[in-house]
Image 1 (spheres, one colour):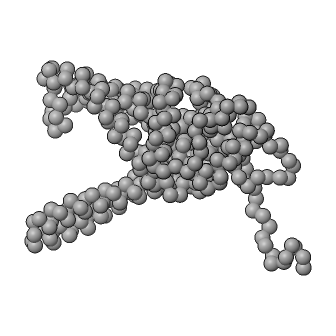
Image 2 (cartoon, helix red, strand yellow; image 1 turned 45 degrees about the horizontal axis):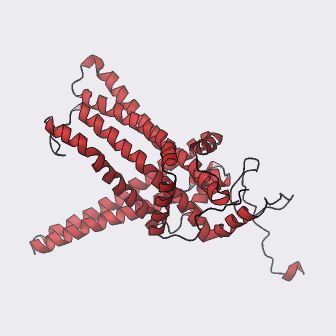
Image 3 (tube, one colour; image 1 turned 90 degrees about the vertical axis):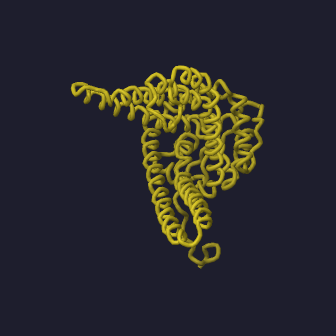
Length: 359
């Protein structure tokens, strides 16, 4: 065990503290995190490039090539989906690497992360599919709530339009904002329940469905922090995109490309360049999202289970011996390669009302 402890103190984190700590870790391990995050994003970039090329060519394709172009377009969409699933899988390996860094100050490395991913790849793939289905379900429910609130708002606007135009405009604007906020809150409430599935699998050694149950039990009250992480990553990604887009935008403008979002369809070369730059910005910012979710997982365990004390004990004390018939009710700080997977203990005997078991 390394005698040097981690520089990161473990304590319950607010939304700002979570982002600050993720950025600090990001700056400290920038190139390593780029190497970790790059493969999934490159897979998605390949899919977007194929989709862009054949999507633009679909309108002018001859009848002989139409089927081929449609198949290539579908192949591009499947590759994009595979890249998204790969990102979820890699997130589990990154979480394990982060926890081992917190416990034993082990170096954060791409080799360690992908070795952890390789050891549980198929289980992580199944869990990633479940996460994707759950996110689609959460988005559908949130969109339904948004549509329902928008319908109520439009009905109220129709009534108020005959009374006052100013009141109609104010109520319409506030109602639209309220519907969007309500839909987002509901989405993150549902989506956050599956935020810790890959982390529970690789840090605690759980199976797929046990990790889903674990994620549901941990993810309580994380809506604000999850929304803050998402908004920060979104704004940072598009800020980086705007900086990287300046040379391409100037070149496109000088070449006569209509850069307006309401203008004509972009040429293929410009659309491909835009997608490449977009994916480059994702590579640069994806590690912050990865670190944020891993830190959020650690923070939930600190809040609910005293994980900071458990990590401190794991740093300073030797490994606890395995005793026959004794099962800890808590998940381990970090499952090692030779340790068995964590299995929750069976519920204890129900209380019979007798004191000390005496009749």
